[in-house]
Length: 241
Image (cartoon, rainbow, N blue to C red):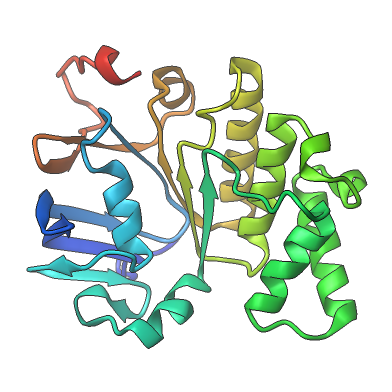
């Protein structure tokens, strides 16, 4: 357990986030420490993914304080963005695998793009992350030969390649059936507990964040605020589940 005095790995304080000139999230206050698992929930268009895009430096922030690791997002320069993202793994709803190459080649492409050159080191790292998600036997498979759950496992392996301190999972179970969604959640929770990265998960799936309770932020009406753990408020989530 990290000491409470440790600096948060993600910290927003009185931060505004705009997208294409329009205010999407106002006065965001969010502080996340190493090893935490956090949900961001809300209706479609409420700003959940906008926060993810701000964390990876894809869209600018203004006002207050906004830091990810050692990077000040308010002063982030374009040349710094690749270095920011090296410490972040992203898992998407639609997997975003390269369909014209094998699982191994998908992962090798990412490693080479992030500066890995030694063939033996690349091969060893790929074997390690595939084993971590139970997919070492699928290294030579093409993505179209895999089920949705298997493709998402490969996407998680890809997110682990550079041993990130942060994993951003944007609706990672959105295209999966209920049983497969729970398998992916079990995997993300295990990675969080055993490897220690922050996991921030955007989801519409109420059953998942009820079955796997963790800190939860609710986006609505241009704000995103933490839901108190002992809240007496009954959240009406039916419209976006």
